[in-house]
Length: 131
Image (cartoon, rainbow, N blue to C red; front, side, top):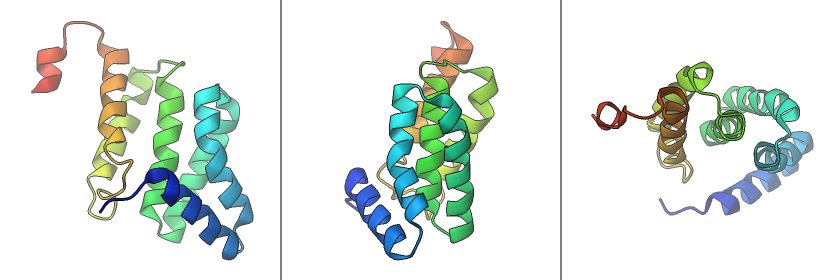
């Protein structure tokens, strides 16, 4: 499946708005900015709430999207390693699910896991991680 993630986000926002979930539609547009602009207090509340609601709604791509951006906010400037490693591993496993693997953002889970491992391991673990 060839999908542009940002087109998908826009389409998902429109559909959520049409279905009466305007707050959720607005929130998913703000999550990447929160992660990249360092608005971590908001991100730590909003992203898990979106992921939970998406899971309840049966929207695994939206759940992945929220979990991914939350993790990015934790492992980027905050450089979390050991405390984020289980979440990064869980996200990589979630991305392999049949109903998620075609999400255009799914490969990002592997990158996030690698960043988390780098935050945790430091130098000298490359051969072990490649295995």
